[in-house]
Image (tube, rainbow, N blue to C red; front, side, top):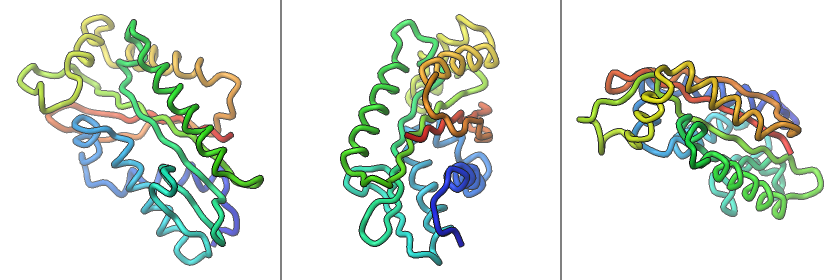
Length: 202
C-alpha cells in the first residue's frame, strides 16, 4: 500500500477511472453534461478504493476542493478540475482561455488551503466528439451549434483535435505538466467520443 501520494498514483488512478464506466457510459455523459462532475466523482471513488487500507482519507468537495486526500486531518493532496470542449479551443471567442484562467484561480484557492508539503494538482478535461451532431439532437446533446460550427470550418475531428491540443499545450507551456492523454469514451447517439486530459502539478 502506498505511503505517499505520487504523480504516478494520480495519473494511473485517472486511467483506471475510465475502466469503471460501463461501455459507452462516458460518451453519453460527456455529450450530455459537464464531464468534470462524473469524472471527478468516479475518480474520487477509485482513489477511495485504492487508499482504503491506508490512513489516507479521500474526500469530494472538501472545503470546496474537487478532490482532497487527507491524512491526520491535513490535506496531503488537492485536485482541482475544469472541463471544456475541443471546439472551445478553436473558437474565435477564446473561451478555452477563460476555463484555463478558472483553473488557475482554483489552484490559488487550493494554495490557501495547503500546508507546506501539500501537493496540488490541476486537471483539464476536453470533450471531443468525433462527428458532427444531427440537428434533431439539439437540446439532448449540449452545445450542438458549437460542435457543428467546428466541423463546418475544419471538416474533420482530427483537425479539430490537433488545433485544440496545440492551443492548450501552448497555454500550459512552462508549467509542470506531468501527464496528458486521451480517454476513449465510447459512443452515444452514434457519435464516437473522446475525453482529452492534462494533469499539472504545482
